[in-house]
Image (tube, rainbow, N blue to C red; front, side, top):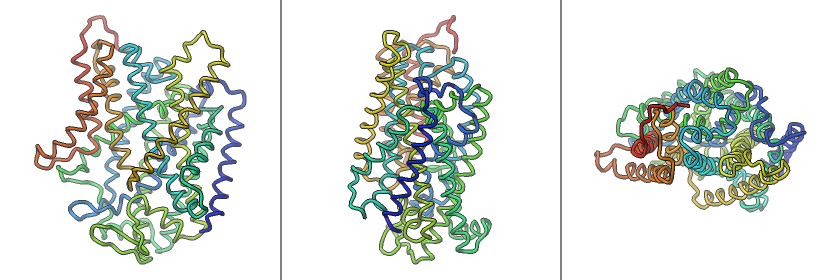
Length: 507
């Protein structure tokens, strides 16, 4: 596929996004940027959140997990769907526990809850952990897609990786600079549409290639051991109970306690519509994730039909190139499918890239301005000065994104989804512990440096447990449940520095 032609489609797509941004940002102000003036349509938010939640990680990484070989020699198959079942449970907890709380307190930043419940130090600690978590997670997702564009398009044109990264970040900066949440509700809807189009076209193309129905495809994949969902090995990181529980709490933490995801939900007019958004979204996300796993199996079948071979220890290779993990989908789509499908893949990939970055950049700017700088409470500043501060923070985070992406390029991990789930266990655990303690108890925390110390110590203890528990237990591996362990450690630490109070009111 010609690299120049693919690049033309990338820029054409970006021009469409700029047009949407211009239209939606007219007459914008800080409330438009932060919460979309609380006028977002719940159906648009629900549909757009699919793109934000899935991102390039699902688009590229999830299909590649299907052919991953486990320690016992079997394929990973559809086992990621265990985590997706957990996601579904987590979205219900968000809809009926967290959203009512956020709407009752009329929050702009969800971390204001910690200030109301505990005090200013806890509030700042929660915001700081969100900023760290979202920065790392968003840049890991961005790196994955940028790296695919670099390898399959821009290397052939002689464009260096750092230039590619800077150009894409500039694109994102341009269309989120003014409109913020109001803009990304619409752009994410558009981008989700193209992402799903890319997924469906690729699935249909390969099904037609083999003249399969979905039922035939599942039967063939099952015979090859690709459709296993449940892992019953208690010592495995992928044991089904751990995966489902871990998925549920990852959703609560990475969606319900994440300013980026909740910023869109609390921009909806009322609680009922916001809950409808969450429940609709949770159902669609299960179907979409299943389709990505089905696509992964189909891609391996297609690769073998084109001559791919499996070698022990190295996985699958086609024409001498490994097609394991994140390399599978782009390699097949751009080198072995019809050129029209390759173009749709690139548009889908770009559509997966932008929602994971634009919302993160907007949410990080919002959290830093509102939570750490206290911009909404600064009566000594004019609206013009507040806007200038917000734009400066927005630009600064863009530079931080650039540096983080370059670090991921240096590390160069072949399965970004594993990296993100591991990092989430460490960075979102303290947030889970803080919010859980506030919601489930009526105790008063001694709000001070001790809160930050506990929040920092919990991930360290969690890391040590993940390292030494296999030694102590004879092989038990801590997997996705690391987030829950981290949250429990934080919860217990807060219990130690808290006191009961008969007049304490739960908020």
